[in-house]
Amino acid sequence: MSRNGPIALIFHTCFVIFMLAPIVVVCLVAFTPDGYLSLPTHGFSLRWFSAIARYPEFVEAFWTSLLLGGISSCVTILLAVPAALAIARYRFFGRDALATLFLSPLMIPHVVLGIAFLRFFTSIGVAGTFPALLIAHVVVIFPFALRLTLTAATGFDRSLEMAAMSLGATGFTLFRRITLPLILPGVISGWALAFIQSFDDLTMTVFLAAPGLETLPVRMFLYIQDNIDPLVSSVSACVIAVTMGALILLDRLYGLDRVLVGKTDRGH
Amino acid sequence: MSTAAAPAIVSHAEPANRVPYALVLPAAMVFVGAVVIPLVMTIVLSFNNWSQYRGIEPVFILKNWIEVFSDPYYAEMFWRTFRFAALATVITAVFGAPEAYILNRMSPRWRGLFLLLILGPLLISVVARTLGWALLFGGNNGLVNKLLMSAGILTSPIRFMFTETGVVVALAHVMMPFMVLSVWAALQRIDPQIEHAAMSLGAGPVTILRRIILPQIMPGVLSGGIIVFSLAASAFATPAIIGGRRLKVASTLAYDEFLNTLNWPLGAVVAVLLLIALVLIVVGCNALVERRYAEVFR
Image 1: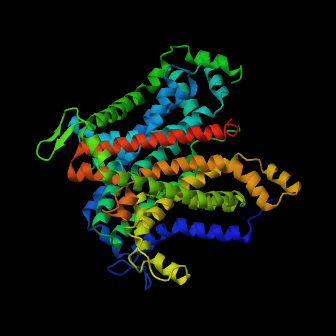
Image 2: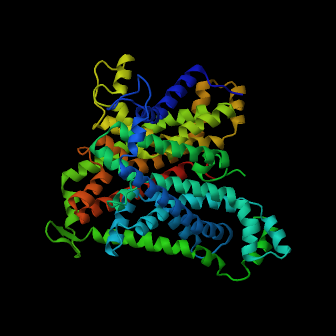
Image 3: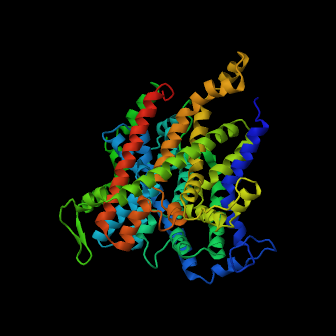
């Protein structure tokens, strides 16, 4: 068993500090008792968290983000599960082209997608509406959901389905009683990852958000452009807390490296 | 595929060959309607005319393309975008690859914890992470300056906010998890016995690193580099917040054209050029990596 030497451990410590420093600083500044940006050196205070309630635009943006993330991730899963089953089990004309198209939002820069959506929605007269935002989010988060459901649909034991079929199960019963329970961990992880991607997206959404229809990242970004104060730190700290919760859930449920790589080991 | 599974697929597909098409149809409709058509419309938009008073005119002219190619302002902006992305890629490779190797040698318990800590930031809002760097950089008396000066690395404070150094450091931080993840995935495919075999044949640690480990993780570093480069070249939040209004990159310039100047055709040219450049670079690099390391990707 090889061990890391002292130099490796020093490097590792510095690396972890580098990765965590900005996140820790945001959370610390959020607890400052002062009226300006400072680290809480003399006591912690929740004044900036209670101040969020006095800025209705942040609260409103939070609900918009939550609603948008919730609906778009559910719509995405409803589209992704059948698509993943088709791609995983059938060989049909156009299969590879479709798979490439479905994964293309990972390749196309989000700024380009944002511009394309803005142009498209403006020309059909729905720019700045919730349904437009919803469709855009479904497209952008679809590949994340698809990859995880695809992995689950490719990697399970078909003999269970064959046994159920020989006992007379067909169609939707087969899917509901056998297939779905087997791919469920992948589906739930795909849903959670899709939700986080929707909840965090700035680059694409910033082109589509209209006054009164801003998501939380967009509201935070526009606020930071004007000034940086402890208020936006406390909002960020809340966002970090929500994401951390989802993250730990994903890690326990499926393993974080599997979720992020989106594939099982090649060797098996 | 085993022969036993073959009849099952036939019987499954028997009701009709239309089944897979019915299953992918809803998603395919959304993607054709909301990806293919908008992208084509954006390309068309880049050839339209625009004037201050008459707005967008649906005519086919090359004015915007000629303007972007002839004005050195755009050349400088694209070069800056490329430079930021390239520097961020090099930094993530130099620090991320060794870290992935160190992680791989840890005991499973520690490895799980640190993997969560290092990959976790990937899912935390980019705005929140960039805000963290803005807070750390501060003005001349930001935390980073205080730390570097007390460690004796700096004698006088340097500016990070609204400078290239600041943007590159923050970009490297935002993209680091992708590199660690990619090298980590490559390390998972290595047989640890090879390292032991080299050791038993008398190879020292430097030789093992150079002759055994490095060649095997190189595909991971390169494919991680491609991901980091393409994401860094199209990053928006970090250059916008840390770089400010002066250090424009392709994505922030396109944003300005679309939402401030309202010259949409010009913004469309910048966006289309960014897309073409990235697709060419990514596809080209992928082809190079796969040819060079064909045996690893078997």
